[in-house]
Length: 498
Ligand SMILES: Cc1cc2nc3c(=O)[nH]c(=O)nc-3n(C[C@H](O)[C@H](O)[C@H](O)COP(=O)(O)OP(=O)(O)OC[C@H]3O[C@@H](n4cnc5c(N)ncnc54)[C@H](O)[C@@H]3O)c2cc1C
Image (cartoon, rainbow, N blue to C red; front, side):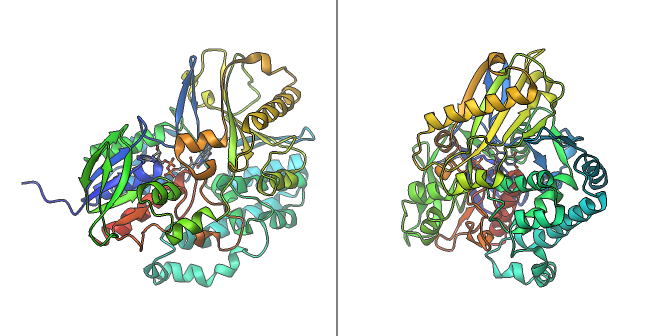
């Protein structure tokens, strides 16, 4: 005889957070239905086919695989059985505006040795810096990443209490850039680590130095390539969810979150024009849309707080099918602009993009050769950009495209434009339309101030009993592993109450 489910739960959105929540809830004994408006899983971690080329359209860097493994372990599964990943070495190819090229080797000691050779900074100093990043991670993660920040119970756990007692050691009172300048000295090495603020859409000249913990994630714990491209990550989570009995409804938008007679307690959704009863709902879409559209509640304090907070940066993305090969380039390549401080000021203060912006080029076919025709390469280019506030994006994207072409043509000593066989560009309004993110921000809110971690949307709604939030715009924030953690945290909070 089938055992009764602990609860019937609707998950809205098959982004990484929603998929993670669905897996965790199904593994915990709930009956789960997941509704996704588009025709497949992934959300921002999307995929695009263009004239024989395939591109990942969102994230490209895979880190912290243990987060995914721990989620799968709750369902008695192991990541290695579902996803093929390989440690990257070199991790990134960095090219600075003075022409210096630095292929960053994997591992703290090898990175430090190569940094000494290229930048002339003593390897012991660089290793000490990486140990500092690692220490920040070890102290901050138990408090700020792994649990809800909005439940008293979190702060009663010994491990969290211990970490809180050490929280003055997380370097919160100076900026990432100030710490990096002091600890590393060489402006190129400083720029290399300052760029990590953009991993959560923030400005390194304002974000607390605590975020230097990202240096440990990338350089000490390891960055990985994923066979099949990043789209294999949401596909893997969707497969596990299905194996656990989650019913996936693609092409089915949720229009309303239903409430009981008290006007507050969540009791179901309308999806595809049908009313469906559920005991709880997990919203993986942006909180702005959840309140404004699904709950029609623009008066909710969290709604007002969210829309009045500083959004994370967005991006201008170019997908280029390149009819040539550039063996000197890696999977991940950075071409830095000359003045990083003004680059971030342009984004966060002027809502604009610098004249010679830093360019990130990801060449997916390095990990998945079939993603480009033979002798060709699929280039995904990302330039940090402000959130959408009605700028003239056509003009801005044209200007950025010219700047990028001239930078790459110079750096590669080869005219790049004639090699572009197929092309698509994505601007913040398009990212907003395609992924539902508020103002097209990539990571929800920016972390440009002390206390930003507490401003992210909680994983459990107090206003609407039975409603839970996950995804990059909820706690603990954006980026693939964090979105997955948010799904697990929301699911655990729900499981505690059913
Ligand atoms: C260009 C770009 C580059 C990035 N680079 C990186 C990177 O290198 N590394 C990294 O870790 N992270 C990166 N990120 C961030 C990362 O992609 C996100 O943090 C993460 O994928 C967000 O997942 P999420 O759970 O918030 O869901 P989302 O991806 O936001 O998905 C939400 C889902 O909800 C669906 N939805 C919305 N409304 C409804 C509705 N009414 N009914 C049903 N479904 C609905 C949407 O269609 C979508 O599928 C990048 C993002 C972008 C866009």
